[in-house]
Length: 132
Image (cartoon, rainbow, N blue to C red; front, side, top):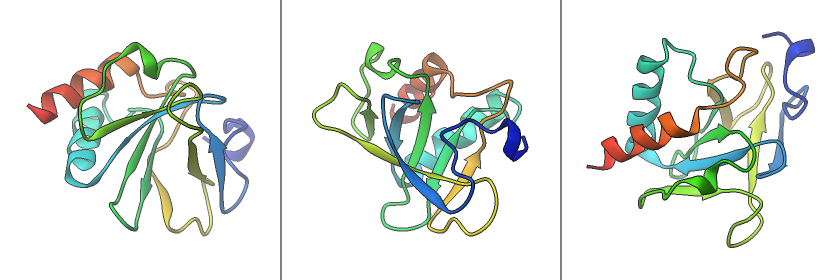
């Protein structure tokens, strides 16, 4: 996907904070569990999982970006935090550009025309299997 066809919420350079619930909802998962979930999603979807943002610092969170207003349809287990406009408080997600210096954020999986978001039901099933 080139810059012209990137979603409007992807910055042209660097990274930017986006309010969860506006352009997308998100599920934040940390560390090893995040890696396991991302790996399983990538395998199941032939490496077209939809947008997954990865942090290179701290708990090494990953943010799985879902369609707006979709995260609340599921009960997420401990270790997976739903981020939306309608939560405990406002939540923001850092979104990196497609190219250039974006540290400490990068794309584990980019959005595409075919997969603009991670499929909520598939993500939920994958997370539930991973925490069992």
